[in-house]
Length: 289
Image (cartoon, rainbow, N blue to C red):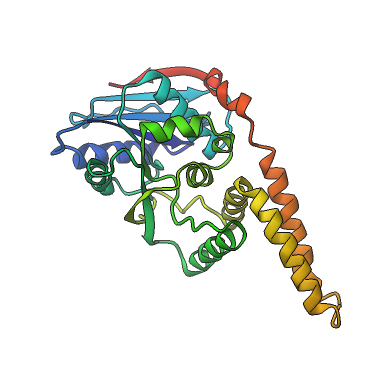
């Protein structure tokens, strides 16, 4: 079977080099064809490097983009490129900084053998961030479940079948939110436990603001459900506080309205025409192997 590992990268050359070396070590005993496609999201630093230890990897391509369009769109463009240009059975998107652990690639491959063309998600069972971030992350999951009805406990680190990739390329929300789009189009996903690793170099790039934006982007995929649930909440809440109306009791309503405005703004990022034309943003391709 043929597996293509998709790695979005931005200004993290050292981490990418170590990641590729670790992937090479992890797949050496696998009787499958493993390739890597790296999407360089218009980094300001030189990403191309030497990779001496890649004997177990079939091919490595570095796609250099003209303009930086963000992490989700970087992955979406990579999916489109691989679907149109490469032969594959599964695509494994993973971050290039070490937080998605290369040793779990073997687990994805084992699960895929019994998945019957279903896609596999790496459900986070353990994280490595500080306590404050983990509390925020739990709140993110609660918020998503409360307003969308979906429990989304996975990120980009997944193993996508070809049929799933095709569906994602036809879904405009893929251009805005990877995990939200995947949850929307696939009702049956195989779950595999996954531990969040530590960055190879430097602190985590996922700040509180980025986590908030990530959460709202996922929620925006299910905005119709969100609007219905929000309307019901507003009606119910007003009935409860009508005898105790004050500035303090109105705060939840204000926050809810801000959230609705935010997800409506983020939903405008969904653009199927931009998605279809995303490969025109490719500047050049370095074939490393």
